[in-house]
Amino acid sequence: MKRKIILVVLDGLTHAVARHAMGHLHAWCNARRGAYYRLTCELPALSRPLYECILTGVPPIESGIVHNDVVRLSHHRSLFHIACEAGLVTAAAAYHWVSELYNRAPFDAARDRLTDDAKLPIQHGLFYWQDHYPDSHVFADAEALRTRYTPDVLLIHPMNIDDAGHKHGGDSAQYRNAARMADIYLAEYLQRWHDAGYQIIVTADHGMNADRSHNGLLAEEREVPLFVIGDAFSLDPAATPRQTDLCGTLCTILGVVHEKPGCKALLA
Image (cartoon, rainbow, N blue to C red; front, top):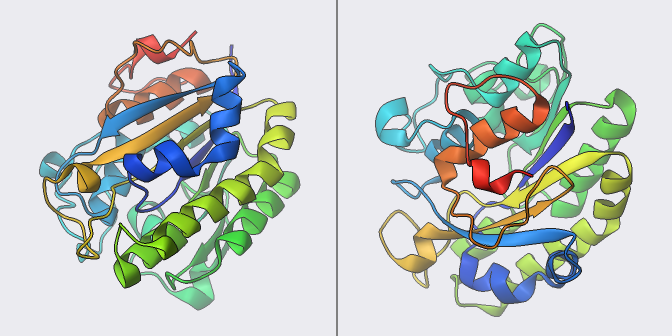
């Protein structure tokens, strides 16, 4: 059965903080309406390479998006491409690097900030380019897109957790509180998304270390959360999804075909 999906990528959120700071998301899990998993992100633990990994299923060493300054379109079929090919509607409220990967590169704010073009892989977009752009605005931007266009695929990508980590470190009150605020913003929307029939995944690209950075092998840099909510998911606590499984898993939920089947154990 074809379903709609919302993918939330909380940039820079490490598993160790998500495990204790996201009270509302864990309430869904405790009520057996969702499930929580720990993922190990691919290498390098950097943003643009891992956006590409999450949205195509291709690890950075194969995609060629191996650091944040690779400014070009992806060479692979993304979740957005596959959805569009199936006649579905796509949207994103996200950092401008996502636009550069799948719509147009380099990003031109006057042209690309507000995107409404059925010929592009991300047909409807609200893109921003400052890391401190408020998460509250990103979620409001996304909800505006959802209510206006009723997309089958909606990406929501806030940056304030990552921004706090780079400014204050992954073991700081500012970083943990940015995560708590993201959970509060999600509390405003999760029930209405669920009621509208969306299957919801909340994850992160990479984590954050105490040195205010990420790119290495430390657990706090590589271990990230995965929350799933919706009747498409098995909620099986024994499932062991990988970051490269996410795109294929989402495609299966959408009822479209991806080269990789995703994590079957995640699905009902």
